Amino acid sequence: MIDVTIIGGGPAGLMAAIAAAEQGAKTMLIDKGNKLGKKLAISGGGRCNVTNRLPADEVIKHIPGNGRFLYSAFSIFDNYDIIDFFEGLGVPLKEEDHGRMFPVSDKASDVVNALLNRLDELQVIVKKNTVVQAIDYREDSHQVILEGEPNIATKTIIIAAGGKAVPHTGSTGDAFPWAKKAGHTITELYPTEVPIISNEAFIRQKTLQGTALRDIALSVYDNKGKKIITHQMDMLFTHFGVSGPAVLRCSQFIVKLFMQGQEQVELQIDTHPNESFDQLFTNVARLIEENPKKSFKNVAKGIVPERYLDFLLDRNDISQTLKCANISREKLESFIKDLKGFSFHVHESLPLKKAFVTGGGVSIKEVVPNTMQSKLMHGLYFCGEVLDIHGYTGGYNITSALVTGRVSGMHAAWESQS
Image (cartoon, rainbow, N blue to C red):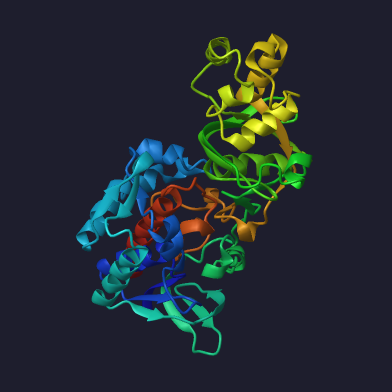
């Protein structure tokens, strides 16, 4: 009889297995893939953004999908404990922009290998290339039913099989039927941290394809004109719409408006979020006054990337050769308005399989927040992306996975031994 069986070898499952085994439980980790930690290995562009060093409150703010549920778990094991944990395994970390923590070596493989070595040290039984067909919940223990192999009798089960995003790493939604069988509600699944599609003519004509805007403020509006969210980061125009950090951060709010029945969503780009309209107008007007014989285009160069500048000049019917002395106040005002708030519509997102993170999952109302135990079934725990919890990119989702993994592993071990 196994004490704790973990299904899923991603960040949450690996951490849960280590935590359970550290408590002395006989622990088994089952994964259908041929490699553990696949998602960790590709995170942070292959460098593995393991967590974020911001204060715990700030980290939770960056997990807009039910992050508040994590307060109890954070009181047991938080982002600073994650840093200590990896440094204790011989993986020194360094801090980059916005508090993101990476291995000093810049190699995700160092993070994955440290976890795998720890599993070995703790003698966790690891079964790879093993498909779980079903879970048979029983009165005092449970059975994990495997494809083509004997069933596993276990006192407790931790489901850590992920959501439905990035399916090539193995997260294909397998866990949801097992949770449903135990009586759990699965909230609607949807893509978050996902690029967005627009049918606007300038997108279809690829006018701005490949153009990046740095440190802009991107705002999302509902169909009543109410601003829902603004994120100040970089963005990118693509052949199908928009992407880049600001777009990914805003994407879950856009997707939710589509889910509420909106057919299109208005986005607005402020290229100079740290200057007011009047300040920007005054600065550009001064440049015009100082260079009356130069073309307005030449004087405006450097305000925004050239392709975006050409696009806005064209939109405002300002000729490329128009001299500064000849630009009307009206034209200048309308150009500055676009710099501060060019607005366009988006029409859908890329599908869930193209998203970085799954929104929705096992309802957190049915999970005990300080143990990750099911409120509906003894000996059943959840951790990681299978839960209805999602954060922005930047180490927040991995933090949530590692914290919930740690807490579920400890408590499943204790329950199995009681």
